[in-house]
Image 1 (cartoon, rainbow, N blue to C red):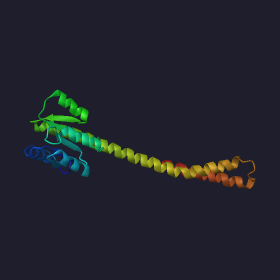
Image 2: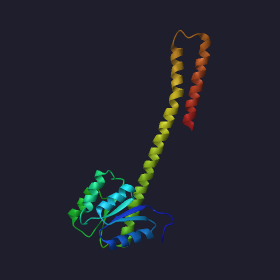
Image 3: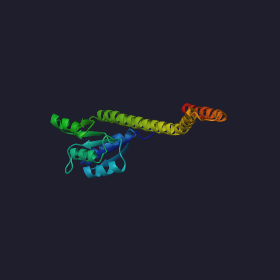
Image 4: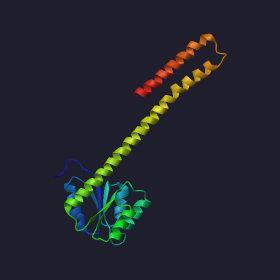
Length: 196
């Protein structure tokens, strides 16, 4: 069952071409946009060029292994932008704990059950996309607050100016209505910004 729009961008990293083909085909059939890398350096280059929503990373590879990739991700400030799920044949508890300490969000043991892999991918991509939406909403909210605060400065400044003038004992009687009008108009403008 293929989704009509991509569900997210996945980066699959494995030194075995057969694993890359199987995992990428499985994900693409589910509507994911998939990039593949056969080693750690290629994975880092792809992740920096276009940050994936999830990286499926082989733990044991020649050259830069999965832990080396995780360390580089941390150094390049891609975490927590890139959640990482380790793919591993190892069932060594110490290695799996090390994976979590390195920043992985999950792991899948090879050979994997396709439904299990998809369930974990769906869950972690869903969490990542939800977090991205929340961050975007928070940014937009802060921009709105900054805009309203900026717009309120002028009318509130006018109110303070007019009040300071009126508090002065030497204000001519004929000028008082003008300052009261300024206070009224500026306060109305400020309330208008808040009601938007």
